[in-house]
Length: 633
Image (cartoon, rainbow, N blue to C red; front, top):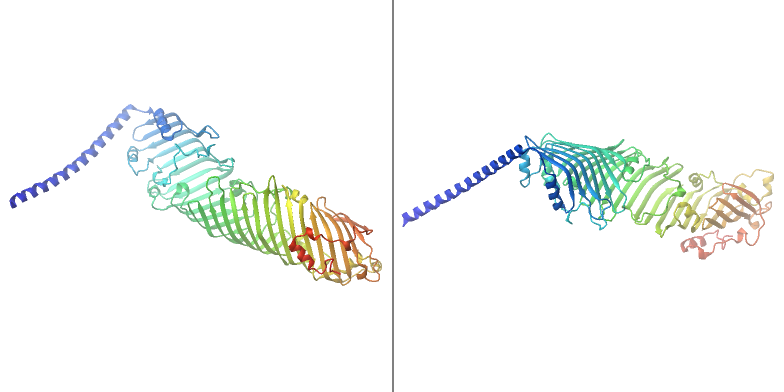
C-alpha cells in the first residue's frame, strides 16, 4: 500500500510538471505564431504598396459616430515607418446646427514606427507618432436647435475618464491654419485662430516643448510652454507638471504648477503671474473691447477642481499701488452664468486720466438680462483719487445679477466728512429704474467746493446732506429728465461772508464801504424737490447773526437754468437794510440778478415742501431742523 501511494504521488507530481511545461510551451508557441503572422502581414503590405483606404475608414467612422463622414483620400505607405496621408476629412454637424459641417480638415500627414503601432493595438498603450503635420482645420462647437452639444455623438454621454492616458506621444507635431468657432447659447460667436503650433520631444521620458501663435476674439495671443514627459502625461495617477507662458503684446500671463487633467485644465495647482501694462489685451480677449486701463500686476496661488477656480492670497499692483485680493470663479452649467466672488483691498486707487468709453449721458442704465458672469464683490481702498476728487477709507459692496445691479453700500470719507450711498438699478420692460439713497455728514463746505469744482464758497462750516431719488430711463440723460426725489442740505454752525448777507438784504452801507468779516450761521436748510429734471427749492433758509434770508424757485436740470427769488426777513436785519427781494435767473453758471416783486405764489418765506411728497425718514430729519419754516424763526 505504501509503495502504491508513493507511485501515485510520483505520477501526480510529474503530471503537474507536465501541465506546467505544456502551458509555457503554449504561450511561447502562441507569441511566436503572432509574431510570424504580424511579420507576414507586414511583408504582404510592403509588397502591396501604398493603397487608399478612405472609403473603409469613412464608413467605419460614420457608423461609430452616427454622423456622415467623408474622406477625399487616405493613403497608407508601409516601410521602415508607416506613413499615413489623409486629405479632405469632413464630419457633418448634428441636425439643427447653424452650419452643415462641424469639422473640416484639409490635410493630415503622419509617420508612425511599426512596433509602436502594434503596441497601440494592445490595452493601455498610447499611440506614438514620430511626425505629424495637420493643415487647414475648421471646427464649429455649438448646441443645436434641440439643445444638444454637437461634439456628442450617437447621443452618448460624455466620458468623465481622464483622457491624458490615451493621448498620443507626439515627438514632432505641427498644426497650421486652424479656426475654431464657439457658439454659446447667447449666439455670439467666440473665434479662436491658430496660425501655427508645434509639439516636440526628444523621447518619451524627455520634456515636451509646446509653442503656439494665434488669436482669441481678434486679440493676438502666443503660447510658449515646457511640459513634463509623455511617460508622465500617460500616468494619470500623478499630477502633470508644466510651465505655461502666454503673451499678447506686452501683456503676459504665466502659470507654473501641475494639473491632474491637463487636456481639460482641471486639477490645476500652482502659481500665476500677470503683467498687464494696459488692459486692452485682457478686455479684448474677454470680448469687451479695447480700453486703456492703468498698469496691473497680479500673482498668487491658483487651483481648480471641477467647475471651481480659486485664486487666494493674491497680491499685485494697480498703477504702482499695492493690493491684495481673493478671487473665486464657479463656472456655470449649460445656459447658466459663471459666478465670480471678489474680495480686494487696495492701498490707493488712482483713476486720474482714465478715458470714458462713451459720454456719461450716453451710458445705458439697463443691465444685461442674461450676463455671462454674476458678480459679488467687496472692494476697499485706503485712498481713491480721480482728478480733484480725493476720498479715503473707501468700501464698495456690489452685486450683479440678471437685470439688476445693487450697491449696498458704497462708503467713503470725502471733503472731510463721511458719505454713504445705497443704490439699486433694475430693468423694467424696455427701460430701467434706479433708486438712490445717499447721505453726507460733517463735510467741510470749502472742501466740497473743491470736489465739485465750483470755486470758493462764501461760507465755512460742516455740511450735512441727504437724498432719496428715483430715476428712470434707458440712459443717464433719460434719467436726468425722468426722476422723483428729495435732496436736503443743512448746516448747524459755521460762518458766511457778511457781504453776502448785506447784499441779500440790500443794505445801504454797501454803497459807502466794502463789507468785511463774516456772520455766524445759526442754521441753514435747503430742500430741493426734484421732479422730472426740475428741482423746486422749497425752501432755502439761512439764519445768521446778521439776519435771516429765505429763497425759493426752481433749478431746471434739463436746460441748466435757474429761477430763484431771494429775500431777507425785515425783522431780522439792521436799520440800513432795504430788504428788497431779488430774482436770480438765467444759466446756472452765469445768471443775472434783478429786483423782484413778491406775491403769494413766490414769497420765499411761505415756501414749504408738502410732507406727503417727502420720504418719512427725510421728513423727520427736516422737522427736527431749527431752520424749518414751522419753527425756524
